[in-house]
Amino acid sequence: MHRSPFSFAHGLLERLPEPPVWLVHGMQHRLVLLLNHVLTQEPQAMDRLARQAGRVARVQWRGFHVALTATPAGLLDLAAPGRQADLRVELMQGSALALARDALQGRKPAVRIEGDVELASDIHWLAENVRWDVEDDLARLVGDVPAHAVAAAARRVLLALRGFVAGRRPAAAPVAGGDAAP
Image (tube, rainbow, N blue to C red; front, top):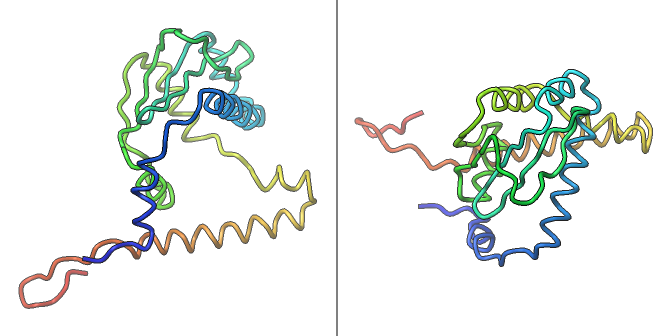
């Protein structure tokens, strides 16, 4: 059996104390700002969300959750505390490292979905079609050439990480004849 050099981090992440409420609330607000920034670059996405105005989607992973409501402008806001969710999405993977590994490999996480089918369909469309153009945002700050260089370097790092993660899979069991499976 071979252990990942990062296996110690798995246990460490699982033992972290629950963050304070003010930190969670602040992170949720920043998440809404980021999502709205991305949405404002996609008019079709804003149109879809505007049709869902007032509806609440709650996303949960382990003990953490965020409840978002669609606004009439086609953006997102934090739902009022205690507001009933029209749609509940729960990430089923319990391990933060496994979620990160799956993301690096381009796999979508397993989810459990309950609630409004139309809202679920629009959120699925958003997840499939809306992308953050980080390079474009960076170019506004530092210019086109440096932004392109940073983005290219980040893509190379991501490819290397994906290759590393893919290479960490357990070896296949031997098959008859003593050869290893491909």
